[in-house]
Length: 280
Ligand SMILES: C[S@@+](CC[C@H](N)C(=O)[O-])C[C@H]1O[C@@H](n2cnc3c(N)ncnc32)[C@H](O)[C@@H]1O
Image (cartoon, rainbow, N blue to C red):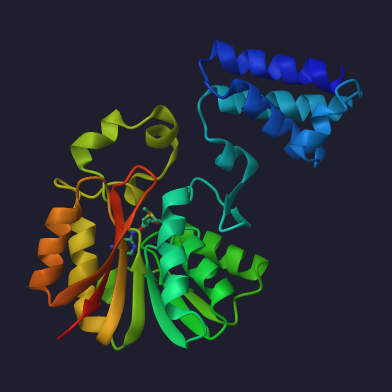
């Protein structure tokens, strides 16, 4: 079978299973198996594919047909132009989270910095910040032991393990530190809204990474309360939030002596990140 035939057969299986991105997904799976750029496949459509590759391709396509996200099937996701290792124990890093990193990098460029990432998952936020800010050091924590294993793997992969410690801890158990910056992309979806998420998300991504409790604000509140005790005075808290949560989160921040410095909007003009300064 040649590349063209194989791509068509993969795409057809996915189309019949109502995967909208069937053509693209088929190309991504094959380019990954052949370790070639997608563009390279498309100019070599008549090239034959080895039996063992066809076998692996069909297996991966049948996983995608069940709606398993490509990031889990291929065990990687690009974030901040780096290939992060991911698996089903971590949230798949989202492009909107890059907005948080972008603003933090701009604010702290060339400064020395001690930061905490609460709910680090794959480590994508803290590792991206450490890549850009050479004088930064920090700690990433997560309540999930398996997520911490993934974050450690990424810190080794990007040669950053000398500047970051990853700890399997609930934020409640962080005491005796004072940070210049706390970053967090906490779970912020209302429990009742979880069932309306797309199948790719609700059936495969960890519930503990998504579920923000009754009003979606349970973990956000905990992050803000905790930050008040472990941030240096005038330290910054950078928080990713969900659609429509800005007003309520602003109220909580003000009550806890935070002054909002920056609202970062996504490409649809929704505020998705708040950066606030502690003024105790
Ligand atoms: C939305 S995910 C974010 C993952 C990653 N930072 C990212 O942006 O892709 C939230 C993470 O918070 C972790 N988490 C939930 N509750 C926590 C808690 N009380 N203390 C520490 N981590 C927690 C979850 O295990 C999950 O990995």
